[in-house]
Length: 335
Image (cartoon, rainbow, N blue to C red; front, side):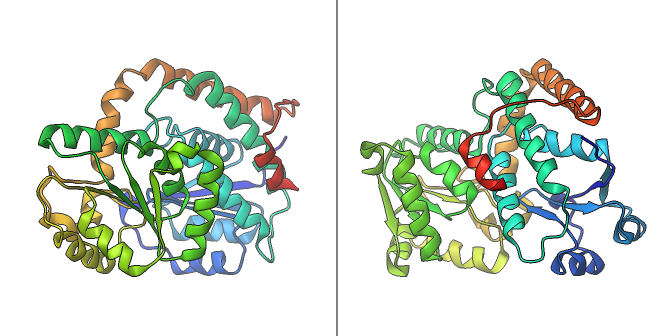
């Protein structure tokens, strides 16, 4: 397998760069073969043989550019959770697979070599995770949010729930199964996405677990949840105007013994929530800090996982066939 055409551009959202207009135009024209947009980063894949690639490098030296083997290595470490601030976190792999599904279905999809690259990437990610990362424990947003809620409830003597989960995207799907210590209320402004999440959780959870889950389809029930929920988990992007409205709804229920965890940004991105004390409001920064103490214990495993990624890329570059069975959900991406 060769990587000579593979180019990756990476931009951390923590660095607060506005997207270059030239890059935005290329994305909108489908010149970009793949785009990943998460709460932490943007990642774009281009063909390095096109004139666009060199133009982008010249215009945006502050962005992270990778090409060839280094591009594949970056994608492999990213999918394995080794580029995340929560090292080894599991959500990023699902986000990449979903982004690829959207890209592969898009009209005018351009880069013919990407299906082969992504197929190998999914194989290699599963191998790295199963051999070096699978048994780390606690490496997901869901497990960390559950710890935040349990610790906060224990310190204040407040009940564990009900918990109000706002969102129906990839992060909400992965977090929900960890929030079933008490009743869980789930709302999203898009009723179709909420219905889809309801069906997928039915297939994933037991009947007893589903009895604890309540899906809110009306604006009135959502407003009531803001007032009555003991803990709120926001699995949506931080947006100042929308967050200001949410703060007002939250304050109607009082502040004592309640908490908000925002998975859509760092504290600096969640300024409307500064009216809530630091003991009751948690953002990505707090989860990263919590995880960092666990990461120190995993330093040897991290080093082994990174080395395994590097060795994997070398084998792929030599053209060696590495046969690892796909799950059905991966095969569906390439059908």
